[in-house]
Image 1 (cartoon, one colour):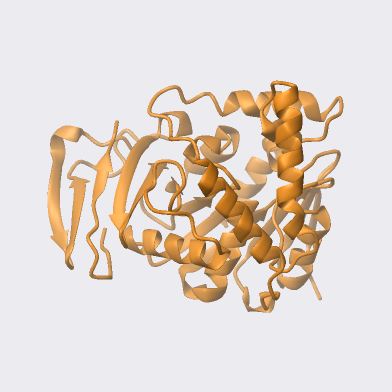
Image 2: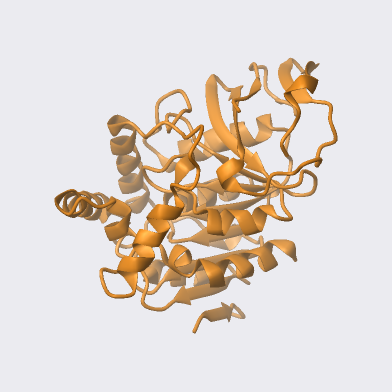
Length: 330
């Protein structure tokens, strides 16, 4: 792993679906050694890279990496080698918020990395108030890991960041998965804060997790799917992440408002194979914006799941995960 800038880098171990084409490992701690590469300090291991590979997110080793003045918390799993898949997470989320039913199937044959961006969870620093600055931080982290080409899997706010990153650094990204997200300047994205606070209140009054309201329909289909999703997030019982701080959450909301009120990017510049997915009733990032992404990114594929909301990919994880695996494996 290398860091191309002058900053110090460290790593540490801590223990009916519609698909529409667009035509118009755990390492042995006893073998840890330190190497110096291009002014960076990297703690690594000298055992076989894919020996005893972990493919369960609940068991993924927690790591940290310091670059650009920020210590990033991250987890990695799956066999090393090939193009890594970097996961970009949603509003208020930390490493503990990825659905293992999505991430585990992808990690079976791909090197997967999920991370806390600056100021989120166990990562240091302060959350930026623009999506573009979040993308810059993600770029610093990815390059510090030594990657010159990646695939991206993103959800919600993570999809905003992914778009900003690929527009600025198109050569870095091979494939792009955009779920529950929308383009810069998209209609009603700037209203996310109001929806979020309302559903947080509803969740408090019912002693529920806010994601049960934000991500799922409140009907006979959505309610059990919501409970099952929240329970899956608890499968990891050790070395869990730090919760997001209130100030960090509020700054993320400001960044989302700025994104929603910003001038639209030229998405015709995105030429990477792109998979777009959402539920048909997304109250946070309207489902019509997924259709907008599909229209504007040439050659993209669109999946809209019926009777589902912002978390459609989680409600239909048994259908979506195989599609994502096939897309990334092409």
